[in-house]
Every structure is written in structure tokens, then in C-alpha cells.
Length: 170
Image 1 (cartoon, rainbow, N blue to C red):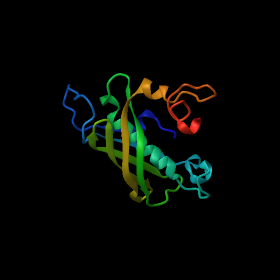
Image 2 (cartoon, rainbow, N blue to C red):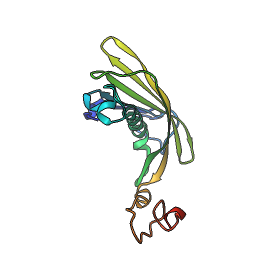
Image 3 (cartoon, rainbow, N blue to C red):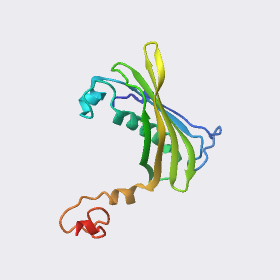
């Protein structure tokens, strides 16, 4: 997705002038926008045979907004990763339209962050809801997480889907 830094605007609740509260808190929100081009269509991505905005890109935009909502509230070496997406894509979006995804942190459950997400359309004189749902992200240590994504291969001793801890890999 092509975006300039000015196209992603982050709004965060719970901030006080000159002071930032530690850790993610309910109410944080962010917005990410996308101007739909031919490269963003289901036809171009191979997820369908129609030249309208592909659902995976709507979900990606929601993920971007949810990540941005909490990114500056994480400690050093920490990040968040998406773990669950529930999303209803309600209407087709034509090329040339602009869509905006908004993610609001609904609740924090330990390391789990549950967001309400919605995507709205601006196309000429048309506006409206394109899709909505919930997205769950998990706070993780970046290095530990990446170590679990190590390449698989013969003799791998990496825990996970291809290492010795996986019965199916034996």
C-alpha cells in the first residue's frame, strides 16, 4: 500500500500534556488511510476476479491502525502481532476511492489487546461503512518472537512448527 507519512494520522486517548502513561490502555485509537489503485484490487491480488478493493487489504489497513494505536506505548524490545481477526466486508470499494480504517483499543487482557475496527469510504459524494469487526493483537518480546520464526530444515533444533517439539515434524 502506498502511503505518505501524512496519510497515517494517529490519535491517542489517555495522554496528558507532557506526560505519557506506560503501557497500552483502553481508548487508544489510530487511523490509517488508503487511496485505492488498480494494484489494490481482488483481481490484481488474485483473491477474486473483480476490480474492487481486496478484502485482505482492508484487513491489513485495520492491522496497521491497531499497531499504530499502541506502538509508542510499548517498552524497549516489545512489539505487537495480530493473532485473531473477525471482519465483515460489507460493500465493494471502487478504484479511485479513499478508505480509512480506525482501530480503538477496547480492552487489555494481560498481553492480549482487543480492538474494535471499522473502515469507512470516501468516494466523490459517497461515504459510508465498508466493513467492521474485531482484531486481537498480542504483546511480545520482538527477539523471542523472531527466534521462533527461524528457518526450518533438516536437523533444525528450533522449537515450533518445524523443530523437535513438533510431533508432526518427526
